[in-house]
Length: 445
Ligand code: GDP
Image (cartoon, rainbow, N blue to C red):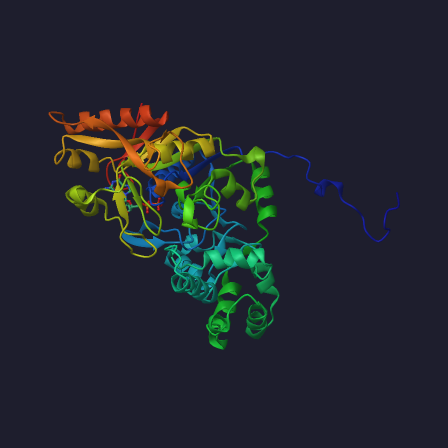
């Protein structure tokens, strides 16, 4: 073996101590998103702080299509790129699997208290999304309409086209963008993409390209792989992985009609998008659900309340709002779906559940003597019953069992409802939410 004379190799720089994070948790949506993941993220962050850990709050998938409300200095704020644990975190990493709009991210960062702004780290390998991808999203939906196809009902965040660009190798990463000397170079790179129709390219004006590049240069862009290695070696970091959206929207495991999001919604998918290894798999995972099911966008919500149950939907709309944080669209609401929840549990091999919005159930029970839970699906053509979540959900109708509520106190209803969820899902409900506040999370013994 010959050794180059001009270079003295330093063996101490070689990383041999391969090991996972000392402790880590994942919070994942087990239905169609908006399950109230934020509250659980907060609770876990608080636990880690008490144990003396520094907190690395991280995402490895999704984009600005996620949305959660965070209270900063008593003021409610919507975040789309930043994690829910942002305020308690010591570092917040937006991983390579994400698609990020630099201008919008910078706007969110500016809403953080000053001392927290520098903790936001963007992986250099993450892809950029801009108005161009958003225009492409709209263009695709319009083409579907024109060709008599069902629309997807995307949030219009440009994530699908952004992922598509990566597939065609026409995406631009943050690392690419840092090499551009002028906004003109950024623009040129974008315009080289032959997949984009001219009308979509027109969105990228000189001023917009300038603003994009300026924003990119203001971000903390890092080599996330080296950063994770450093955190693992420092011995005092706890990792909280936030998986945005929900399992029913997973691009591989969602349902028919491609009415799904474009990046994975499983824990392992998000972990992979962050750059975790098989040894880093979170030791604790929480599958988040609501006490009912809600969904926005195209595709059937199988347990959707019938027109006769409108009054029950109103209870939910009054108590929770059920509007997407990103689009403001009203979500369809329906009964708890144990089939979808079991599916999410199976794909993540995890049975720890947290059920939010339990406060809704006693209110609903006042209007109906028994509360339905969907336990299986029946094929409307063949009558065949399945316990599994089928791809062609629209071929099925829900099979319900009921939790009797008449003559019971609110506490008894909640207790029986949770027991029923455990029976029909096979899961363990470790906590439940009884209000939107971060302190309204009750841990079960
Ligand atoms: P995420 O998208 O999963 O992060 O969901 P969020 O944390 O943004 O919560 C979705 C919505 O549900 C927000 O409007 C919350 O205030 C509301 N929410 C969450 N948990 C509860 C709960 O236990 N009860 C009620 N009434 N509302 C809740």
